Length: 104
Image (cartoon, rainbow, N blue to C red; front, side, top):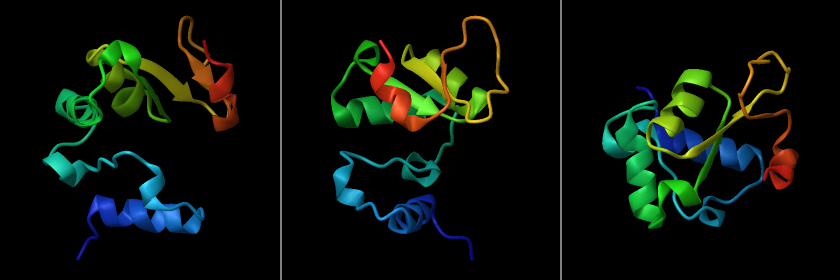
């Protein structure tokens, strides 16, 4: 039987020596029964965090699921492009999560 996404997230965080409680919320595909890029995934997170899209930044490594999904609900999208393969004009990218602090 396949593990739920939330269980997989917990396993991944454990391997990275991170506790789940350092995050305000964790949203997996089975949290609301829909997967990214469905707008309801992003809207659910916004509601739970009580923030507006324009106050939010979403960073992900998938052009369609993450970047375009976040843009559909007016969240500032950043693509994590570790291998620098997504050189598209106007696309906001970072190559390392440490570079989040340099984003304006």
